Image 1 (spheres, helix red, strand yellow):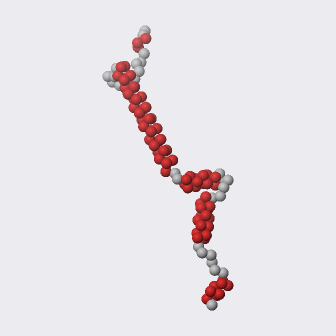
Image 2 (cartoon, rainbow, N blue to C red; image 1 turned 90 degrees about the vertical axis):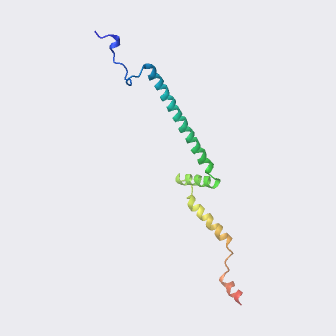
Length: 106
């Protein structure tokens, strides 16, 4: 007749007592918790560095890119090129009309 104690014992490492098993389980949990905390801390550092590195111009470009990809705005690269070209041409002196070129030579 099979008794109550004849049930298969839980799988244990050879020579591991129930007390050692409990201690090892606690150690493993502590190690897992430390790993999670370390990963979360590293993730926060990466996020904080990422946000610190963004300047207002970069943020504006990101927002414009977002709106362009959503189909609600102009291409930000095209807008930047247009503004750069406008700035370039505004700094140049005005061109002299062809009629005045001959007048200046006389």
